[in-house]
Each structure stands twice: as C-alpha cells, then as structure tokens.
Length: 325
Image 1: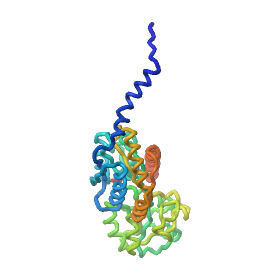
Image 2 (image 1 turned 45 degrees about the horizontal axis):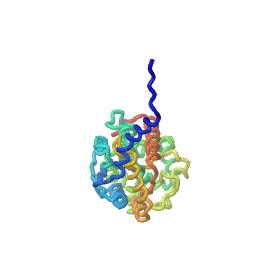
Image 3 (image 1 turned 45 degrees about the vertical axis):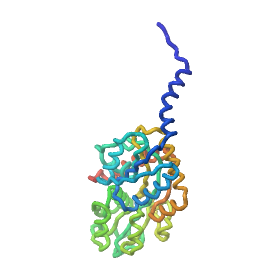
C-alpha cells in the first residue's frame, strides 16, 4: 500500500487560494451602487428609518445605497426575492422579527429559511410594543385591566394587525388568565378604525405606529413591552413593572444578504452600519420614529435570529398553533 503525504504548506496554500477571491471582492467593494430591498410600503416609519440609516452608511462605503420598496405578504415577497439574488453584496434586504422569526415559526412551508437562506449583517434597531386601549375602556392601569378582563372576558375584544401582535395578545391573555376573544385585522389602519370608537378594546402595536395615535389623543397607552420606560412615553409603565415581563411584542429590524455573500463584504457593510448608528443625528431620528439604535456584529445578529426563531416557535405552540397569515 502506497501512502501519499501532502505537505502542510500545500494545504495552507490551497486554503489561501480559496480565500483570495473573497478578500479581493472586499477590497474592491463596493464598486457600484448597492440595492436595499425594503419589503414594506414606502412612507411608513420603518421606511423612513431605513432611508435615514442607508444615507449615512453610503457616506462610509463611498457608494449610494438605493432603497427599493417591494411590499407584499407581510414582507415575505421582498425577502424571498433577495434570497434568489446573486450573493455579491450588492443586494440586501431589511430583515425583521416578523420575516425572520414569526413567519418562519408559523409557516412550515415558507419559501426561505431564516438561518440557511441568508447571511445576517447586523441589527439596525429595536422598537417596543405598546398595549393600547380605546379611551372609553374603564381601566387606567394594568391591575384594573386584569380585573376587568378576568371578570367579564366576553365583553371585551383584543385586536391584532399582524401575526406578531396576535401572538403578543395571546401571551397577554395567558399571563392574566383571561379567555377574551382575539380578532385579526389586515394591518393597523383598519384596526384603528374600530379601536378608536370602541368596537374593539385593546391591541398591541409597535411604538413607532402607536406614539402618534397616543399623542393625538385617539387612544390611550397602558404599558410598553420593554425593560424600562421609554422617553417618548415616560408615564407609561412597562409590562415588567406589573410582573408580566414574559409578554413580548418587541420588534427588531436588521440587514440580511443572500447566503454565500463573502464574509469580508458583510463585515465592511456591518462596519458602515455601526458607524452610522453612532452618529447623534441618526440616533435622534430613530428615537423620533419610536426606535432605538442597536448595532453589533454579524455573528451577534445571526445568534439573535436563531434564538428569536426558537422563542416565537414556542410562543406559537403555546398559543395553540392558530391559523395566522
């Protein structure tokens, strides 16, 4: 039997040869504009947030970042489209709790895998959820609300505009042991049309969408799902203060690339993202929109996606695996 020995130096040279294209790609990147696909309509708070951050990132990268809105199916159309793009760093997508954790948790036949189909490039920001009530609801705090909803569960309805907020509502009902009904709506606008006059009584909504309604006096806020009170609503307590820290409605948004995008390219974009989030005017704008800058490494973001998928899968199972869209 003849044994053939390959010198370690040859193995090292082979490994370096494989890495060379990725390193070269990073050195020349970006050589032309980058596309950021936002899987939501133009003009909303999330869209404004993305454009603010991308404009600042483009200064660092030396190329423009073109924001393209591709809404539909709760963000899944835009995310699926980016999955199929060339993994060269010139197309990225706005990822979120909804598209990378909740949708995969509730849809076993989803057209993408949040872990395997993408390389995650960093978290942009988080926004807490706010428990809103119609102004006529005879409860001004969480203790009063619990007594009301456990004593007369058939008299009140909690509404949801997204699968995420539906599951948040189910968590809240479990926490207070109430069997009140949850009604699904296709987004926040039609939900608010029924919440304001009191045809439904409660809902969870992300802070960016909730704060304008609260400031306008159309609804009232009873709690936020955050570890501390937020500066935009300093008088509104947290769920944690009421002993219900397990009720989750916090949402994050981040950057994702098609699987196979070279790590040096992802790292260069991540560095630009973190630099953008450190700029005071960017952080201030995010707070105005109800968000809080996050940042961090691609590795941290990837771990968050995996852990959030596990979390929301468990929440969905505990809610009885209801039919959600």
